[in-house]
Length: 158
Image 1 (tube, rainbow, N blue to C red):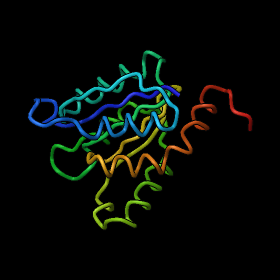
Image 2: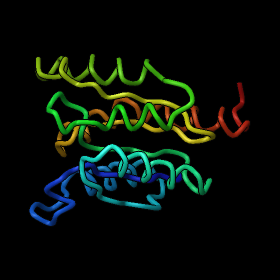
Image 3: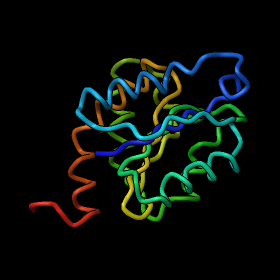
Image 4: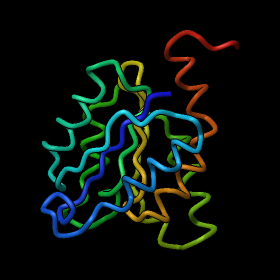
């Protein structure tokens, strides 16, 4: 599986804070035997997030795009809105599963607005912005991602 990671963070985009969540997701994806083809950082700007997602999906070189950051309730958190503008179909079960598992760890999980969905033959999943939260939520959805990709590419043995 070919994976792209898009970190959404004003401070990381400005170089004021290192991106820790993106590299944590690189490590998690590589442990699954997947190839990370892109790791990018953008500011919490809807237009930049949408543009980044569209570029990653348009090339056809990516099976999964993982975003990290911008899924909360602060005024600058717009990753779900940007994702919804790009996807064609929602995958609510993935977001529900991540929230359910995260609620076992923290009550703050109910504030997550993360979404997941399909754009062409690509699955896009919003993950939390913290390295720990991103890795924990990745563990929840990772088992379903290869099958989703196979279904989208017509290679699944159903």
